[in-house]
Image 1 (cartoon, rainbow, N blue to C red):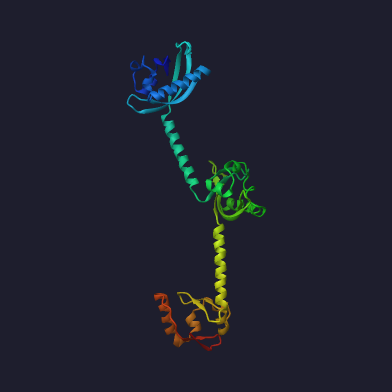
Image 2 (cartoon, rainbow, N blue to C red):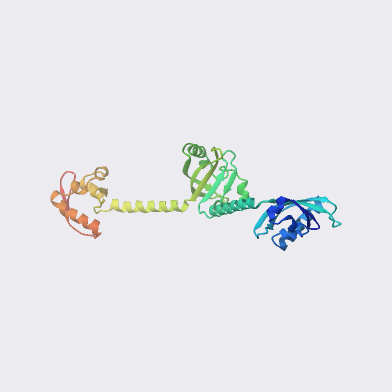
Length: 331
């Protein structure tokens, strides 16, 4: 506690002496400026508190004081008029000073953690969305979700999840999705987010519960990835694969694909018809043992080894066996 008259210290208690590092004799009769970080802080605090006191009779503010040893102390100052009047310059003001250095240190660390978390969340390419499944209230989302949805943060906050972002077909899946999360703790699902411009965006979500302090499920967090381009690429590859397979299957030339272990992987219709087999009869069969005469197996095995180990193309002639044991000469 400090008693001040016209910004000069008139009385002081032991606690403030310990806080400031000064003795009572060093402080009595001194301007209160002795305890502040600098002149600017002295003027700021004085202006703030005296304005408040003039209006309400008391005032409160945070300030930075300077300990006698030079260290900085964060304090909370509460003030009120004890006697007299400020208007005639003869009023006593009581200042209660509380050290909040540790509190501010914790608060600053917490703010830094919050800032770091915010930065990390908003740096993600994937969308993040947290909502209360019992009310549909959005709790938290990142910039990626805002961009993808096309809605502003204000609009998102007023919407209901998942109802306002998905069509009737996908909403029918919601009950099953919630059941799976409750049972397994998580789920990966593909549904289409309807944007503000009414465009569906096929999104792959990984969703799970966020528990409260007692360990009970409270919120659902969903991490989403726009897979529209991936699906388009997959469909394109499927078409190309189908086209390639069509060429192979309809080719008048014999075609067979054999893996590194000598097992038959693919055989086209032309070759199947010539040998008298059905596809299920040849897939997985040892090519040499099934389709090559014994006298040719060593030669063909050497050709295979050359193809596999040296990746060198080769042209050769040998015989292959039909299902009924006939030999066909092939190149």
